Image (cartoon, rainbow, N blue to C red; front, top):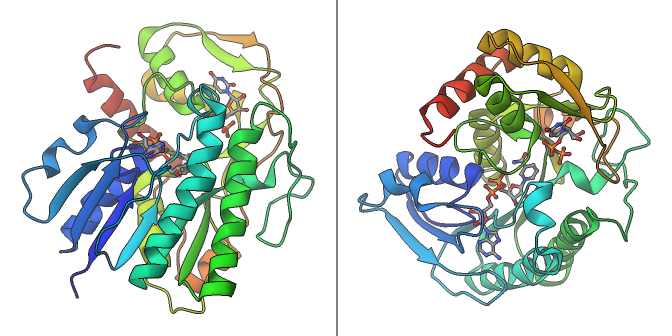
Length: 313
Ligand code: NAD
Ligand code: UDP
């Protein structure tokens, strides 16, 4: 049945793919964004669709609309952007969640929170499953985001316990694909752009730190499956690709895929950079019958093709 669905952060990388999917499924979509890191270009192709509506708004301020479901994705996601105005990042996570939970409560709408693997901080257990409470520095440069997202999860569960709001919390691990911002300093976009330009590939620290990369279409499928679970499924549920790469391996893979002559250089490691990260997706497999299907090589090739189409590289 067709629903009216609010997607906050709908003008961003993940949000724009989600809007597209929800429209294709026959829903009415309200895409809300303050365009801090998002862009109209990401959703321009949806603007003329009769089921699509665009609202410029900051979720730190209340917003009311008659909706059946909310995907709360609004929040800068890359370290460069979330550290640009750290207080606003925390406000977006905390006040933004309160505003969107208030909307869901009033409308009796189901609300999904885009949480993050960053709630595990620099993890002491490996791989990370949802029962792990994390190892987060509360006063570091990443804290505005990590602690903001942790507090958002707290709010979601208190609204669930106190107000019977139907919540769904997913912890998203590193996701990549077309419409990533070329200038947000994330490892996949940095390495691809450097490789395409033949510039040095910037390895932060030893390059032995690991991440696991999920292609965006797989993630979107996981988000939609989670939203459609029965009411007693609240999460948190990890969504990510359990294939683990060191940053050195990723750099070599991207050099191979692009046929680049770029060389690796070492740069300083940012503060509190997690050493290892890999999701345990047992819960996602069990509750959502979900696991990533796009191979990292295939996803990277699609992402390379996307970056080649950008004019200003
Ligand atoms: P993005 O920066 O491309 O998208 C975020 C969107 O939210 C942007 O369009 C931005 O303009 C908007 N936004 C930011 N603050 C806002 C505010 N106060 N009010 C309204 N809009 C606001 O990032 P993304 O990678 O698409 O991430 C989307 C969500 O997924 C974020 O909540 C992020 O924390 C979460 N997430 C992403 C990843 C990842 O690897 N990309 C990993 C874990 C979690
Ligand atoms: N990284 C790197 N070179 C870059 C950008 C990032 O070596 O040019 C490293 C970074 O230090 C981290 C990993 O890649 O260990 C992933 O960084 P990203 O910012 O993409 O995501 P996050 O740290 O939030 O997982």
